[in-house]
Amino acid sequence: MNFEEWLKSVLVEITGDSLWKIEVYRLALFPADLGWHDVTKLAGDKRTLDLAGQLYRALGSIEANISESYSRGSGRDRARFYEYALGSARESRGWYYKGRYVLGDSVAEHRLKLLTQMVRLLFAMVPDQRAYVSFLEEDAPAYSAEQNEPTLADSLQPEAFLRLLQDIPIP
Image (cartoon, rainbow, N blue to C red; front, top):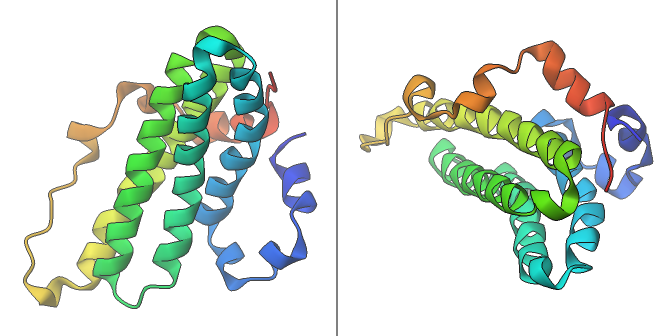
């Protein structure tokens, strides 16, 4: 299954909501769905049983916080939930890294790269939302992709990201 096939499989109760039009939401729901297969494999090994639960909660939190942000009225509130989603995406990468010995290199590398793209997207969205409410005179945290982004993401070009959505290993 690739991303396009997955999109067609999502129930109308999800796709019929206006939230579905938001790209970052669709991209966040996808790794949470892929994660089901991954945590099932991790849960089968006693050494990674706890890791499986942590990973699944972190993956679900990305989508949940994006959903929550969509229902907020101010850019400041949306930015806060995007920051939560950003933290969960980074947390998920850490769990995938730790689970790589059970999941295998191709699955772990795929998920790490996919989540790195989520981090980059969310990272760009936070200051946009903060700027939306600049009249509040709030000191917003400084975001700079050059200073804070991991070097793994630097090598991913748009074509590479599209490949991540096409060639999806399952453990």
